[in-house]
Every structure is written in C-alpha cells, then in structure tokens.
Length: 354
Image (cartoon, rainbow, N blue to C red; front, side, top):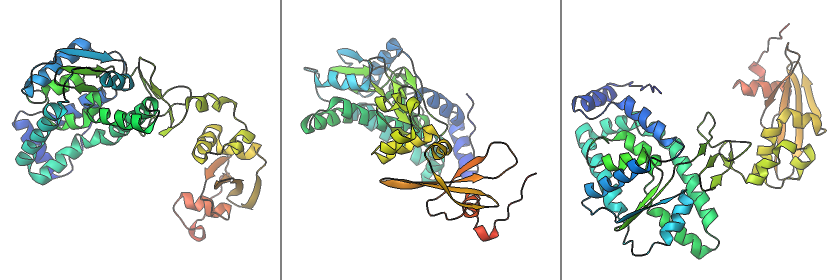
C-alpha cells in the first residue's frame, strides 16, 4: 500500500532529506509499514515475536525473561499477569519508555523543534488518532470485562499501565529508526504480535485481533457482528465509533418505529435511526410535514429526551426524493436546504430541474 507524503514546506523537505542522508529511513515507507502493522489481524508470528522480546530485554541491558506466556487477547493477558508468581517487577520503563525518550531527544536535537514537529506530522501523526482510539477502546473493554467491583477495576487499570502496546505503538514507531538499536526489538514484537507485558523474569504477550472493521473515518464500525475480535472470544462492538452492546446490534434488523421511540438511551436511539434510515422512520412513524415551499417539504418528529428529527424532503427531477437532515431550529424547507450549502435562506436561490 503506497502512502503519499505531503511535504509542503521547505522545513519538511529538509527534514526528510537530512533523514535520508543520515541513512535513517524513508518516511513514506515507514508510514506504510506501520499503518499495515497497526491494522494487522490474524495469528501472531510467535517465534519472531519472542525473538523481538528477548532482543528488547538485551537492548535495555536486562537478562532475557525466563519464560514467555501467550494469551488470546489483552483481556486474557491481564488475567494471566494478575496470576503471575515470582515474575518480578515491571521493566516497561527500561524496555519502552527510556529508549523512546532517548530516540526522540536525538531526533529533536538533529532536526530542531520545527523540524521535529514537521517530521512527526509526516509520520506518526498520520496514524495517531485512529490507532489511539482503537487502543483506548480496547482498554475500556478490558476494564469492563475484567472488573466486577471498584477494587478489581483499580487492579485491572494498574496492570494495563504496564502494557507495551505492540502493534498499536505503530504511530511512535513510524517516527523513529526501528531498524537498529535501541528500538529494533520493540519493532519486531510490534510487527508480529499484539500487546505485551515485560517483567523481570517473565513476559506476557497476546495475539493480534482476528477481525477489525472500521469505517472510512477509521472508527470501529460494524452492524452485524463484533467490530474487533480476538481468538479467545474477547470482542468489542461498535457502530460508527460508538460502543454498543452485542445484543443491541442483534435486533437492528427487526427495528420498528415503535421500538425506536421506546429506546430510553438517546445515543442508542440515534444509532437505531441511522441504521433504520431517517427518511424511512419519518415515513413510517406518522410524522407530518410542517412546511412546504419551492425547495421541498420540511418534516419534524419529536423524540422524548432527545432533540427532534427535522429533515427536508428535497424536490428534484428524480423519482425518489432526497432527504437532508437539518438543525432542529429549522423553520422552513428553504432554510434547511440553504443551511446544507452554508447559506442564509434569503440568498439561496434554487434552480428547479426539469
């Protein structure tokens, strides 16, 4: 997968040129490589990942772990970690935090503050938002799945603080030279496995997801199953980025206007409306038009505990009307259509198609 890099300033061009001349890495290749790693699904390469773990320990000046334990997901890994005996203290600081800080300081010294900012914008920043959102959702799901009481939740959160994010550390790895010390071990794990936990005498490492479904904006999104799933059965469901219960998705195919009205959770009701279709809902729910003009018909239906659904049925030359959702304050069809174009109704002059 080719990834274009937009070098729009002289500083960015200079930063990329200096990096290449120094033999560091090609920026576009790094972004493509780590975007692929962040979204990778399927079985981990356990042999390669374990080699990376041992290398990461050596790079940190530590003895290799006496044992490496595999888990099917971050959720199972937390359970395994909490049951470890004689594993010693966490060595995440030595293995991940310090090497990364050193590499960042080196690059900042080489490129300067402006150069470093431009370099980050062309590399890690490209992966940051979607990858961070995915990692945050997994953390939340692990806490929800693992913690039954306040004390248990606190323990789970503490374990999660010890995690190295493996493939989901891709944004930072994209910004650095991962072909040599001190980050080559971390990179090898990230390209071949999921999250992992390093301790003095043991490491726990988990499999990658078996499924990952996202929309065009990079948000977790699936209407007929888990948006992200792991081989041990741990799974998370979402609709256009919003977490939803599995049983909620199961009933989307049998929705009715009455069921949508009965939903007390406003966010879930919005998901239902998106899935069902606002136009279909208005048609089948008994909504009445509140205004007509040369641009179309304005429809409005009140929802308990939420803002009303207001839409314009646009008049055009096609057999099927176009539907536009507009702000609840909209009073006329023309005002609603003008709003979609960023115009005031008095300056919007539609041309009727024939």
